[in-house]
Amino acid sequence: MRVARVLAYGWFFRMKMLMRSSFNSWLGVLYPLFFATVAFFMFKAGADSKPLLYSSLGAAVMGVWSNTATPAGSALAQERWHGTLELEVAAPVNFALILLPLTIAMSTIGIYSMAATLLWGWAVFGIPLQITDPVAFVLAVPATVASIGALGFVLAVAFVRFRQAWALGNMLEYPVWLISGFLVPLSLFPGWVRPISWLLAPTWGIRAIRGAALAGPSYGDIGMALGVGAAYVVVGLLLVQRALHAARAKGTLSLT
Amino acid sequence: MAVVEVEELARTYRTSTGILRRRTVEVEAVRGVSFEIAKGELFGLLGPNGAGKTTTIKMLITLLLPTAGTARVLGLDVARNAREVRKRIGYVFGGDRGLYERLSGLDNLRYFAELYGVEPRVQKLRIQELLQLVGLVGREREKVEGYSRGMRQRLHIARGLLHDPEVVFLDEPTIGVDPVGARELRATIAALTDAGKTVLLTTHYMFEADALCDRIAVIAQGRIVAQGTPQALKAGVGEGTVVEVEVYGIEDAVVERVRALDGVSNVGLEARDQKQVLVVQTLPGRELVHVILGHLDSSEVGRVSSREPTLEDAYVALVDE
Image (cartoon, rainbow over all chains, first blue to last red; front, top):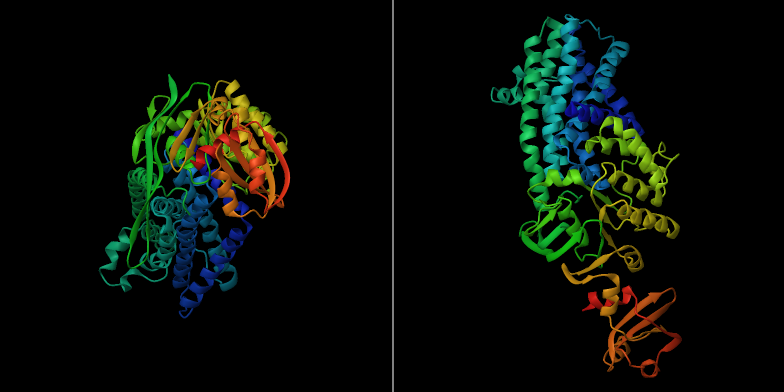
């Protein structure tokens, strides 16, 4: 009960904080429109509308990922800078319960990004919003958001341990776009890339969303997205105490 | 039984420099400090910048692991029982940092109340009590970014007391706060021990330590150089007199000549506004004003006064040793 409360309040607190930043809000508004435009021009050559929706959905999930990977690193860098990271570590609650709502809140903001991308594509470029299995689609979206938030959580653990790891978040943003199949099918990549992409929750998330929208039920992929996301949480929980112990030993919590 | 027990506590930082030829440098921030704080005591840790005060406090509040020695708070080892220690202590630091600026004071307090496991039914009442205590009633819904330094500091204190901790660590809580605000904060700190809490306070301000602390440890270059009540530390300077001479553009060689005088125990040179003040501590029974002035004939001399030693004199003498 207490764990659920800390997670829920932490999520609410982070959402409130994210919404208060007008600069970030503007970036959040503009980014998905940019993604949707790029995706449209990449796929507009064909007459068939399916590739357009395929790319529009990819751009939508790109927005969720971009709202999580880079901002999670920046948020923790800011927490160090403002001295709040030390105060959170000094609290008796498991530190994982502080990090998890932070990244889940960021990926939640990505839901806007997803909706904006799809609506922009529909309103400006005429990309139809025909969903084959609405129930699976409605389940696939939160599953994808949660699993991407969980991946952000693992990254955030690294950000706590290594001061400069925020750069890792920036660095991973574009490769994950590619090898998760957001824009182009994974079948176009060399075979050795695929096992890597299977380890990434966004791969299963986009498969689940595209499946529900374009083909039909995609519950297997939804399950995989949730399963891989749960694995991230377990890995993060195992690593977070080690990361904190190392940060206390090296005295890096207050260093910026 | 002591609430805080520190034995030979030490902390060394390792830093690396250079890109191709990496060099590791070790800095001994704290070099084996020992002290105890009894229940309900207000204990001061005094020292200049970089003396090891904050490093010591951070080890006690479990944010840093000691490299040697032990520390126990309420009988719990700070390295091994970090979580249990955290539940029972409060930590407040000075300055602008440590708050979520874009959110209100109330949001900040609610968030930390959740992190400290304050029961939901208790939270509202507790936050109201603390807002009353620190004088922020009516301002709690404003964004922290609009708060003055004093208001932020009071919010810090409220945050540190949310879970009603038995031991409170205050790291330079009045730094940068205007005189009136600092006086109010000192009253709040004094009220903590009245409420039965044990307090460890670090400060640069001698008069603050003198007014608030039951006992003081002076720390310099990572070691405790003196420990005792403010009265005992003042007595440690001796029964002598402190002569203060306003001077303008005094040369180092002249200061050294005064320092070498028979009967002089310590000499300091302080900058005050447009002038300098030569502060000379003399041994008991020695009347040295004329002798000192005799050495200053080449300098421009202003007002001359003599007084009893203060805690600040004791502190300066100790950290200069």
